[in-house]
Amino acid sequence: MRTISFRDPDGFIFPYEEKICRVVTAEAGGRLLAHLDRVECRRLIEQGKLVWTKRASAETAANVLASGDPQIQDWKTRSSVEVLEHESIWFPSYPTEWAAGMLRKAAMTTLDLAQSLLPCGLGLKDATPWNVLFRGPRPVWIDTLSIEERDPGDGIWLPLAQFLETFLYPLWITQSSAIDSHELFLLHRNGVPAEIAWRSLGIAGRLRPAAFHWLTLPHLLARVAPKPKYSKDHRLSDPSSAREMLRRMFASLRRAVEKTAPLSGTPTHWKDYSGKCHYEVRDRQVKRDFVHGVLKAWRRGRVLDIGCNDGEYSEMAARLGHEVVAVDADAGVINRLWLRVCEHDLTILPLIGNVANPTPGSGWRNAESKSFLARGAGRFDGVMALALLHHLTITERVPPAMVLGLIADFTRHSAIVEYVGPEDPMYQQLLRGRDHLHREDSREAFESTALQRFEIADSLPLPGNRRFLYHLVRKGE
Image (cartoon, rainbow, N blue to C red; front, side, top):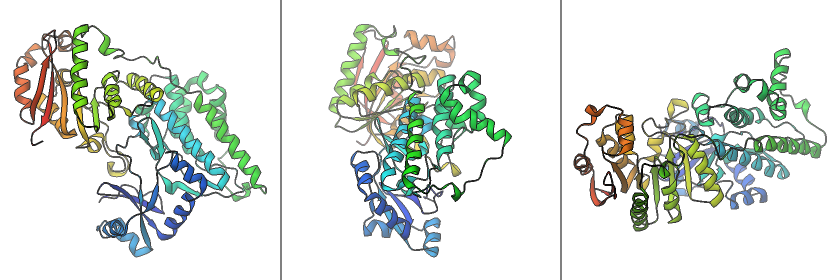
C-alpha cells in the first residue's frame, strides 16, 4: 500500500514517482482549486507560504488511478475522483526533529495563514505542525485540502484546541523545563493534552497571563462543568463581528507564541565543539581548506551534514550554493544554528537527530511520516561526516563498516569523512579505558573498510597527525 494519508474524507496523498499527488473526490477537487484561485491564496502561494496545487497531467492521473492501490480502488467505486499534484518539498521534516524555534515559526505560519484567509471567507479545518514543512528556514503550509469555506457568522475557530495542544503547550513546556519540544512529539504525536500540560508547567507557569487564559482557566472550568458541545446557535448575525472575534483571537495567540522566543544561550554539551582544544589552530585551518575545496568542486546539489555540531561546515556548504540538511543530536546546537540560519537566510534545514537512533516512522502503521533513514536514502549528492566516526564506533559501539554503509546509503556520489586516530585526546576521552574493544582500530583498517563501498579520491592528514580527512566517491560513479 502506497497511500500515506487517509484522515481527510475529501482526499488523500499518494506519491507517484517524484511527484506528490492527491486523490480527491471530483467535488472536493473543484472546490479546492476554486479556493486557491482567490487572490489571497494566490498571494500566499507567490510568497512561498502555501504550496502550489494543480490538476495532474492526464498521463499522471491515469497512472495513479490505475496503480492498483486498494484505497484508490475503493474510492473509484464510491464516487467520481480526480488527481491533483502539489509542489514537492524535497526533504520533509517533522516536529519530532525540530528545534523549539522551528515549532514557534511553524505556529506563526499557521496563524498567518488563518488570518490571511479571513477576508475571503475561508478558514482552516486543521491547525497542526504536521501540515507544515520547511524549505531551509522558510516554513510552508502543505495541506491545501484543509482550507475550507468558513461559516461567515461563526466566531469560533474549530481547530483552536489542536493549535494549543500541538503548538502552545509544547512551547510552554520546553520554555519551563528540560524537555525539548521534539521529545514531546515522540511521546504525543497529536499534541500534548491539556491535563499533561497543566501538570507539567507548575504553579508559576500556570499563572502566567497567557497560560492562565489558554490553559489554566479552561482546565479548571472543565473540572467543575461539562464541556459544552459545539452548536450552530453560537453563530452571530453580523459576519463582521465574527471576523473581528477571530482576528482578536489570532492576535492573542500570536502574542502568546511570540513570548516563547527561544534563547540563543540554551545550554548545550557540544557548544563551540570545533573551537575547543581538540584541534590545534593550524589543524582547524587545514581542515577548513580541505572541506571547502571538496565542496567547491562538487556541483551544486544537496548535502547532508551528519553530526553538524555548531554548523560551521553546513554554513560553508550553503554559502557555496548547496542545499543542506544539518543533523545533530544536541537540541541546543541545533536551536542556535536555526537562529543563525534565519538571520542570514541560509539554505540549511537544521534537524535534531541521532543517526545511531534515528527518528522512526510514525502514525498509522508507522507510514504517515517516514523515518529519517527512509527519507534520506539516496537523496543526497554528498555527505559530510566530520568528527563523527569515533563517536559512533566508540560511544555507540557501531562497527566502522556499518557507519560507512550508512553514509553510502545516504549519498548518491561523494562523502567527506574524518577519521580520528587512537592517539587523539577526544578518542581517549571517549574510550575511558576500554582499549581492548578497539585494539584493531587504525587508519589502515579504516581505509580497507572504506574501499568496500568507496574509492578514495583524496586524503589529507591534519598537521597534528592524529586526524585524517578523506574525500570518498561511491564505487561505480
